[in-house]
Length: 342
Image (cartoon, rainbow, N blue to C red):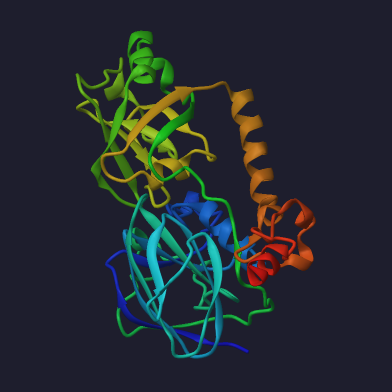
């Protein structure tokens, strides 16, 4: 059975996103896709479907939604206040959205991007092999009130599952690989960069995140002679005034600002999800360390289904049932007999 998702109200930054478009960098089109790919994998695990399924990415604010038939949903990414007909929903979990019921998703309580996943995925027409909106390239559009989004056939049935909460929504430590221009920065500048606590600026979007700090900017030797070349998400460009920008999913494909380093894929969601004012620190690692961390990251995503737990535990499936004190305050009953005879 298929269904449609009806949009009654929505925030200004809600778009359809999937894993993006690979293979178009040489044509001037960056991959795009979800700002937080980990959230896509979490939603796929919660619904038992492919991580290729498209979902709704909600930047800062959700909206009000309704389904034309009973559907399964999952909520991942930055936690938001969510409820079905006024009944609060657990975040990072899967639920049933009954036909005609209203799903309300409010503002983020931490982080920046929340995700609404639908059983079967959003089944809008693909463009260049993906359903992801890439607004800077003119592909797709922001979702608006009155839109109706078709859903694919849902082959699953399970709901009421949850995943452990993650800590990537409040800034923190970010690991960085040396880039092609890292050596252009004097060692003193590189050391200061690694020792600096940065603040995620309010100027941030799906193209890039500006970070600021107390003190002077970061100088580079021969910065004006850097040739414009290929850049990718995660690259940290240093602008003319010494301010770092971390490039994100919809970044341009070439650039001439020198890059002091590149955030590894495992940590880029932490930068994307950092809310304005969050603190970030960058730490340089070696290429070998980066490769090992990437393998661990991919394995963690693959193992997400193993981390699922039910929202309400079924006693028939609890292997440790005997370790629980299911009844407390039990007596032999003699106390009542004595009282009756007194």
